[in-house]
Length: 310
Figure 1 (cartoon, helix red, strand yellow):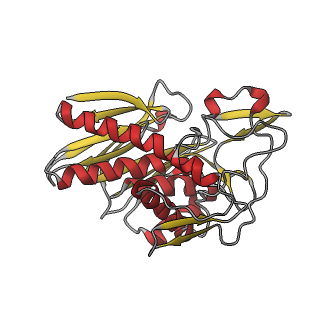
Figure 2 (cartoon, rainbow, N blue to C red; figure 1 turned 120 degrees about the vertical axis):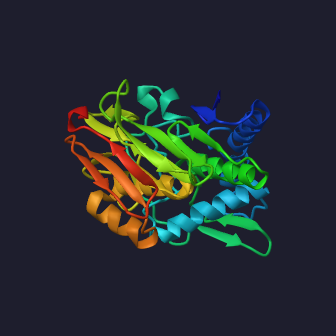
Figure 3 (tube, rainbow, N blue to C red; figure 1 turned 90 degrees about the horizontal axis):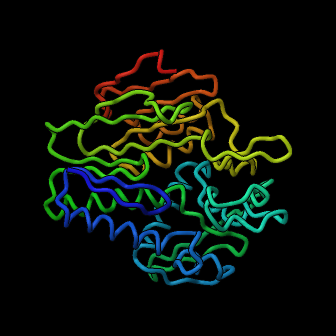
């Protein structure tokens, strides 16, 4: 039993849910997009970004999403950085105000302005309000999809939906009884018509894959991509091409898949394991080497992989 729809610039597939429940998931994703998209000038996030440092009283959705993004910004010491919205705009472009897939080549970012905010955001818990620094804008694209899918799964479980899975363009959350296992196919970084491998995961898993090999453009002969390392204000340059992270929470997996790409295998694992010891990682280097970090207490219990896949 499956149900498909398009939202957040990707295709969603919902499994093992009755049609009315799947339609609730669809409506939720549309609401998330209308609220949290940086590409829609009418979104609540766009309103926040236009305030130039003034206090903002957000909806519950925006407040919780921003609070979560800020939490992981601090947990990762700024490696995961949702505050690069203004930094990625340049004089040479019309602005990073729509999806990369929709931008003509002559409007793609040619450089990234330095990120120099010491305290990019103030979250006032008593007032449930948000205040961005005057030179800061929020881009929730790196966390909104995974966070919103996880939130919906949590709500469905609370309301008695005991089994299901939601796949939002490769960001996947599964849940069900302990005896239930899910087979997940991981995409091949060099050939989208093939799978890199299949894994079997426990119920209540979150699987996220991030790659620097898909959204690419060239400026003056130099290749750029969309994963920005805020420390140097440039696209990440680690040895990793693709990283898949599996944990008990899709938000965690999404955040650390990006951190792995920015930091590379060794430094990325050190940071991830410091905060989430049971997290598991499957990565592919730019030379095609597959790296796997297993954990006896993790979510993956079977890896189906042949070196000939690369």
